Image 1 (cartoon, rainbow, N blue to C red):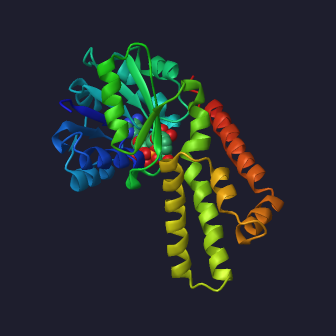
Image 2: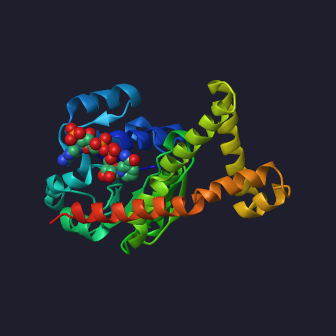
Image 3: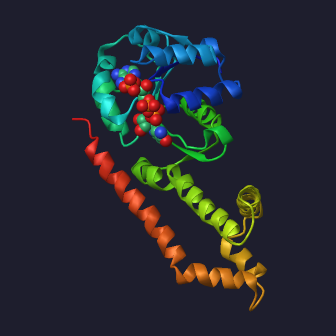
Length: 272
Ligand SMILES: NC(=O)c1ccc[n+]([C@@H]2O[C@H](COP(=O)([O-])OP(=O)(O)OC[C@H]3O[C@@H](n4cnc5c(N)ncnc54)[C@H](OP(=O)(O)O)[C@@H]3O)[C@@H](O)[C@H]2O)c1
């Protein structure tokens, strides 16, 4: 992309995104400027990724075509300086800040072209959807840039902004639930006599393969279960045990409670 991008905040998520952008050659290191309140953090990023840092965030912003806002929600109050700062008229701001509406961001940094990207947590694997939304000021070119940046860390999906908090509870936190399920499966293997390393290998490939099968065939999970489960057989026995533990309902409750928590946290982090 023939643009300069400025990262305000260079923490964990910024690092994941920069890694994806460089790996996919969306930007070269000289096109990426970072500013973080922590100097050692900037030194680390320069050393590892060859990006440029600035001691003065205002100068990084002045040269930028895109600003990627990557501070924590509770630090939004510290970036009010942006409102009065010099910036290109065409500047596109992309915020990854959780729980913070475009209207709130505009109140802090001033009106303009503002989009949100809610990154997934599987950046390293380059799998997992990131949510996108953009305000009416954003052009088709801005949206193309937003999508290209999002696609460098997995897949992207536009969703209504009102679903962004739910996204955090459902999509972003989703892998945690899968990890917990994987843990249970591995323990099941060990309990049945398989050495831990074998059990891990078997479960990882089962999970990857099942995910790919569902994605690539377009089948709904129960279609496959119904096809595979021999009447009176092993599979249906497993299924019955899960349902005795109210497994489907438990998963739904876990998602719902996480979504409610994300909504509550959004209230807590409201920028006045
Ligand atoms: N982690 C996730 O899974 C995830 C997923 C989706 C979205 N997000 C969102 O992504 C954002 C970044 O999260 P993160 O996990 O990368 O957090 P993080 O590692 O704490 O990174 C934030 C960085 O911003 C720095 N910072 C604080 N105030 C600043 C300021 N005024 N100007 C410039 N830099 C400043 C922090 O420095 P200090 O630490 O020294 O204060 C820190 O290095 C958050 O808004 C989070 O809600 C996170």
